[in-house]
Image 1 (spheres, rainbow, N blue to C red):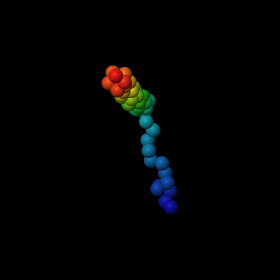
Image 2: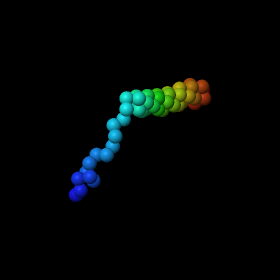
Image 3: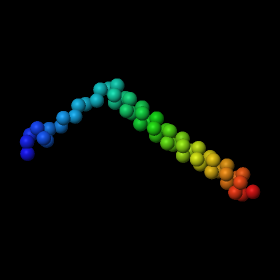
Length: 53
């Protein structure tokens, strides 16, 4: 195998890029979590107002 093929050619991210990725990942997680919470609230409202009447 050639030494150049096994060499890691990726560059390290700057502090700003790392921070941006972390913020975007947290925002995406909060968005998905918010969707689940909204769906659960709508399900509870459906159960209490429609299903169990």
